[in-house]
Structures are given as C-alpha cells and as structure tokens.
Length: 289
Figure (cartoon, rainbow, N blue to C red):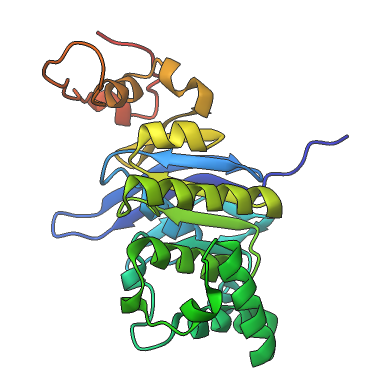
C-alpha cells in the first residue's frame, strides 16, 4: 500500500516583523510535517511556537512578512489562497483553540449560540439543527447538563468549563486538524487531565491531526506521539515522544535538566546555558559539555 500523504507539511517557513532596529525574524527556516497524529511543539516563551501556528492559518497582522516554500494542507498550498479561500479553511478544515477562553468568547452572547453559529457558518444548517448539534457537542466534551450550559454567558462558567466550550466550538465543524495553543496552562491539575482526556478521545474517534503547543515537557511526552523542540524561532529537533528523555541535543537536555524533581537529592536547579551555534543552519546537535 502507498504511504499516506502528510496532512500538513511546512517547508522553510520564515516570519519576520519590522522594528526600529530593522527586521526581526520570529520564526526562521522552520520545516515540519505531520499526519493524523498528535504533535507537540515545545519551547520557552519567544521560541516561535504560537507564531508558527498562526502563520499556518495566516492569522498574523498584515505587517508580518511570511514566506515559505510551501505550507501544504491536504496537498493544497495555503500561501496561494486568497483571504476568501482561507475563510473556507479556517474553522471548517483547521481549527485553533486559544489559551484563555475568556478572551475568545463573546461576553454578551450565550455560549450555546456562539457554538451553534460556528456550526451554521460552515454547514448552512437551520437554527434547530445548530442547536441539536451544539447540545450533542457539549455532551461530547463531557459537560453534564448541556441544556443548562447552552443558556449561560461566558462569565458564568468556570475556567475548565470555558475551555471545554471552546473545544466544542472548534470541533463542531469537524475539522481535519486542530491546533491547541496552551489549552491547559490556566487550569488546575485535575481539570487539565480531564481536558486532555477529552482531546485524546475526540482526536482518536474523529481521525484528526492535533498540534499541541505547550511549555510542559512532561505533559507533551506523555500525551503526544511526536515532539518538535523550538528555540529562537528554529526547530532544534523533532523526535518520537517516547524518545524525548533520551535526546542528546544540548537544548533539549538543558530543558529536561531544569525540570524540578520530587525525589532525589535537593539542590539548586540547573540553569540553561545557551549556545549561539544552535541558531546557525549548519548546527547538527549532539551533546556538549
């Protein structure tokens, strides 16, 4: 059987912004590809994780300079599409869950109406159909009383429920790829595990691809299939999640060594010593003392 074509393929993506000191490259020469799997993108703040995700959907401001050989989704180069054609892709084919639902939901509209609108927009359904699908989706993300939650306003729901509502809104059009940008960072441990379980079930049941952006190495290693490590706008390495802790790349090793350990001898946490060579195109990785 022939190998399945990649769901998403990014070739040599570069995103730059103007500044008083000249152009600044927030993402530089990033390439990645994925199928219907869970891919984690990890790195410290400013490494280019979210910019990469927004560039895929072309959600960056007009002054951002985006260039790439291709950003191919299901064989279609997204850079060649008009803004009207991209609106056909966003939500319907590729959805994105933001970090904090409070800033993504309209505060003066009931949450059920907002989810139903996302369905109607892409499916051209009646109000009754949209309501039925919304209630089913709320149940799918394990909200106990969908009818009650349907009529609540965003300020009336907790952080964990708000995140579930955002997941429901992004998944109701049945996209092929979901991008989740720090979807659990503002949640406590118990709710975080519940949200991850929901994402895992829905991705598996629907045969979707998932890009999971996070700072949490341990979380990504246990939840994702593969991990992409970013630093300074570049990809340091990409490897199977199960191989993360055996990585020999000095940046990955530095991130792992900085993780606090509950057991063992207590002492100062190591600090990450950065090497300018990591940002050069010819750096090949490997352990350094």
